[in-house]
Length: 171
Ligand SMILES: [Zn+2]
Image 1 (cartoon, rainbow, N blue to C red):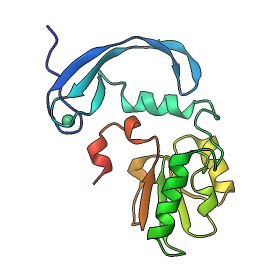
Image 2 (spheres, rainbow, N blue to C red; image 1 turned 90 degrees about the horizontal axis):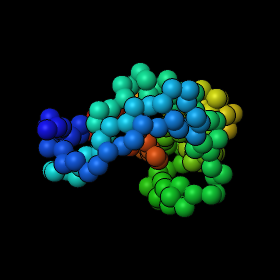
Image 3 (cartoon, protein in one colour; image 1 turned 45 degrees about the vertical axis):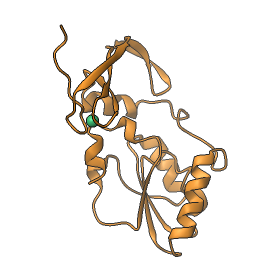
């Protein structure tokens, strides 16, 4: 019998969905040593899907830092969700206000906005962060824990599913 597993977000009971096999792929590249699989659960209260056991944060951080530099790269106009986000920001923000994009990768989302707003980003993958900086994004750190200060708007695309405790992100 499997022991009880609790949602990392709200603490609700995890309902087993199925097994997650070992994998040799992570962040667009083949890793030398297979990553241990686990089980996929869905929270009975908030419906968050999560894996258990989790890889620890240091291991994940190391793996993300070694990712393929093109894995999450997109042309600024290629993503409809980015365009919707930019249109929303233009409706809500006045020129010169500040934006923080968490997990900005190479600045693809922010690039078309750098002339309108103070664009800041955090990014764990240093090569991507350097590319974002060249596009006019001020890199303020490499991890969510580095965030301080206040911003008029905070965005995050393809991030929430990668962080250790998602509820901490909303505080
Ligand atoms: Zn939950």
